[in-house]
Picture 1 (tube, rainbow, N blue to C red):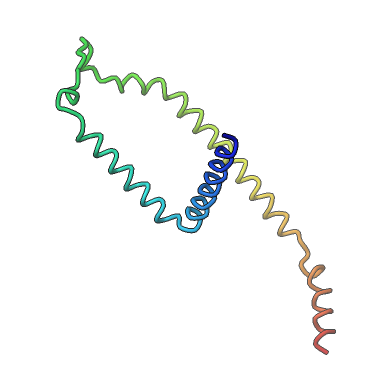
Picture 2: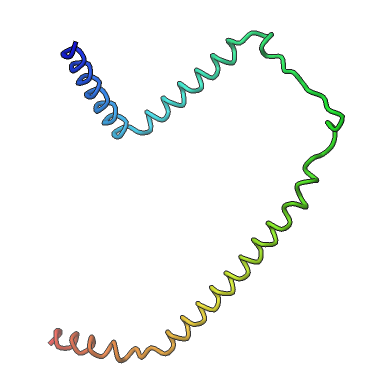
Length: 126
């Protein structure tokens, strides 16, 4: 029994490695094949069901014709308001950071950094 189990385990491991290698080497055909198999299974299930199973049961309520989406809008206003405030404060922070960065860039003395490089370049060219 142990030898049979070990042999089966080894064969399963090799099959897994081969299939993993195939999937990594050929991802597009694998995805398309899985999509095709999924569509085929879905169509088979859809057309295999009988007409008796296809009938849907509708539950009627006295408020069935009421548009419930109207009720969600007042509850969403605080969410929209807080998102707008967060966006405005983060935009202000970003604008201030950009202004500070530009000010720091204006203060940089470019000649201080460029002169040693120019000197090395001239010495190398000679």
